Amino acid sequence: MPETLLFEGIEKDDLALMLDCLEPRICDYKKDEFITMAGDAFESVGILLKGKAAVIKETFAGNRVVIAILQPGDMFGEMVVFSKNPVWPSTVIAQEDCTVFFLSGNKITGQCDKVCPWHKTLILNMLKIVSERALVLNKKVEYLTIKSMRGKISAFLMEQYKKTGKTTFVLPMNRNDMADFLNVSRPSMSREMSRMKDEGIIDYHRSAIKIKDIEALRQYVE
Image (cartoon, rainbow, N blue to C red; front, side):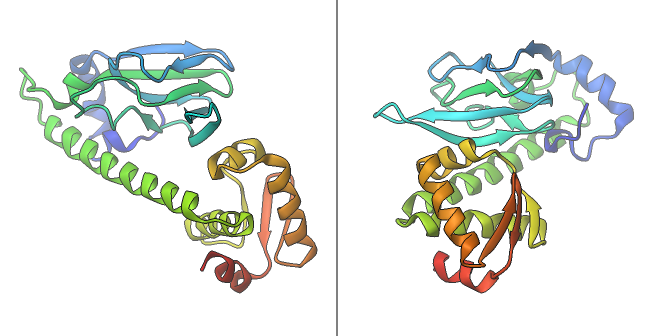
């Protein structure tokens, strides 16, 4: 199993016993297959074991907005675990063949009959994950409030720079998903990035980006 924050601090020797207690369900999905559908009844938190998937939301106008791109070890559905309205808020689509580990929310937050020593750690980890996801959603709102195309792109690239600590990095999503994430059109975004390249602010080749003028990016974000 890939590393996931939900099991952080739990010894590997305890993992088999823990999984026996949690009784997870493992499912395989083909590329472009729906893993969850917004509005369906929520049953279990999902953890991506293999592949890549996109969490998407449709606006009232029918436009698709990418909320997140999931990599192995990433979790989805954790924001619903404590909800009084247990339905999937977003749709998750496999971007390539995927394997998903589903875990009942009751097994995470409910009282463990066996009083397993790792259960408290599991609950604390879940609370940390929910808090981190709330911060990510807050960042998403910040992108949506930026009016200019260049400002949105600059904010996104600055965020990747802060995460990697490098001026050269690989984008975590393709151009289509990046455009959906920033809620802009792909052609307009590509044209703006091309202009930024011509102006010497950035350089790129496919999904690899090099920031050449950090101060310029900061200026457009501000």
